[in-house]
Length: 173
Image (cartoon, rainbow, N blue to C red; front, side):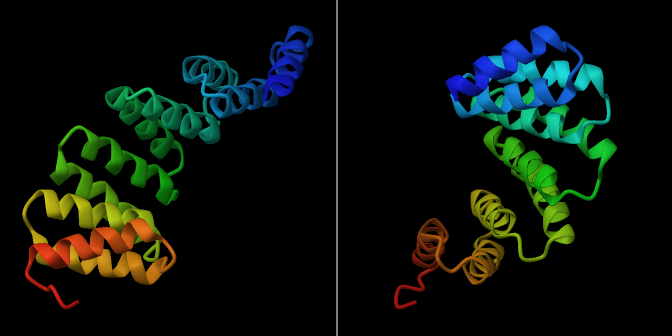
C-alpha cells in the first residue's frame, strides 16, 4: 500500500486531473487505514467526474470507518441518485441508519437492497438485526433464516439466528 500511495502521489504530481489516479490513491489510503486521506482523494475524483459512482461509494465506506454516519448517508444518497440499481448502496444506507439507531429507516433501505438482490445475505441479516432491535422477533427470525440459507458458511449469521431462536424460546432449534 505504501508503494501504491507513493506511485499514485507521484503520478498525480504529473497528471493532476487523472481520475483513475485519485480514485486508486483513495483505495490505497483506505487499505492502509488512512480514511481521512482516502475521503480527500475520493473527493478529488468526484470533483473531476461528478458521476463517478465508485468514488462516491468508496468515500461512503471510508466515512463509515470514521463513524461519520450522517456524512456517509449523504454520500450514498448521491451515489444512489446517479445509479439506483446497486444493492450495496442501499445496504450501506441501511447500515448507517442502523448505527444511528434508526431501525425503521434502516429496514426501508435493507428492503430496497433485497428487492434488487433477493439473495444478498448481508442485507437479509441487516433486516434480521433491525427487526430484532424493534422487538419484531418473528420477522427477525425469517430474515436471519434467509441470510443463513444465502450464505451457510457465515458463522455470524448462524450466531444471530441462534440468538433470536433462543430469545423466542426455540431452544432445540
